[in-house]
Length: 340
Image (cartoon, rainbow, N blue to C red; front, side):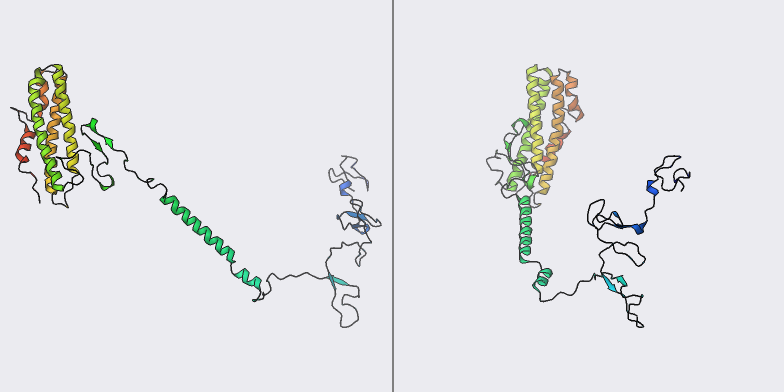
C-alpha cells in the first residue's frame, strides 16, 4: 500500500509509514462482513462478540441480509412484499422476503367533533380571559386619565404668578397680582383710582382716571424743566441730585401709565379712539421726559449750562416750552374722553 502522506510504499497492515512515520492506522480497512453495530451506542462489534467492546451492552446475533452481510436494526416496521400471482411466494422470490413499510403521517388534522366542549373552548375565548382583558383596559385608561388630570394637585398646570409682585421700587406703588395679557386678564393693583376699585369700575371711569393722570404728569414735567433752568444749572450737588431723582421717578410713572392705558377695556370698541389718543399723549410725555432726564444727568455731572440744556434744545426748547409740550397742550383738551 502507498502512504497517503509521502506516497512511499508501506507493507500491508503496517501501523506507520517506514519513510515518514505517518500513522497508517486510520487507513486500515475493516471488513464490514465481519462486524456488526452495537444497538446501544452504535459502535462496531466483532462478528462473534457477545458484548459491545465500548459500552459493554449485550449483543445478540446480528440480522443478516440475503448477501450475508450484517445489517443494522433501525426499528422500521416491515410488511411482506406483493404476492406473485404466478406462484405461492412473494414476487421477489421468497416467502421470507420483506421490505420496509414507510411511516406516513398526514399534516392535515382530522375534522373535530363540532359538538365537543373542547371545540367550543378553542373557538371562543374563555370568560375569564375576557374579564381580565376588560379589567386591564379599564386600569390603563383610568391610569392615563389620572396622570393627565392630576386631580390631587389642581394647581399643577397653573403657570401664572401666584404671589403678588411688589412694584414699589419700580415707581408704581402697590402690588401687581397679574401681568398684562396673562390669562386674558389685565393687571390690577391694590391701589384704587380716585377712590374707585379698578376691578369694579366702569371702562369710562378707568379711561377718565388715566386721562387726568396724563395732565398731572404734564404739569410735573413743566416743574422739572423750571427746576432744571434754575437749580440744575447753578444749584448745589444735593439740589441737582434731588431734581434728577424726581425726574427719573416721573419718567417711570409715565411709562407705567402708558402700559396701563394699553390694557384698558375699550368696551367693545366704544372707547377705542379715546384709548388711541391717550396713548399718543402719553408717548409725547415720555419723549419729553427722556430729554429732561438726559439734561439732569448732565446737571449732576456739573456740566456747563450749554451742555445741561443741550438735550432740551434738541426737542425745540425755547422760553419754557418745546415741541412735545406744544403738541400735548394743543390736543389734550380736544381728546378728552366723553362717556357713551
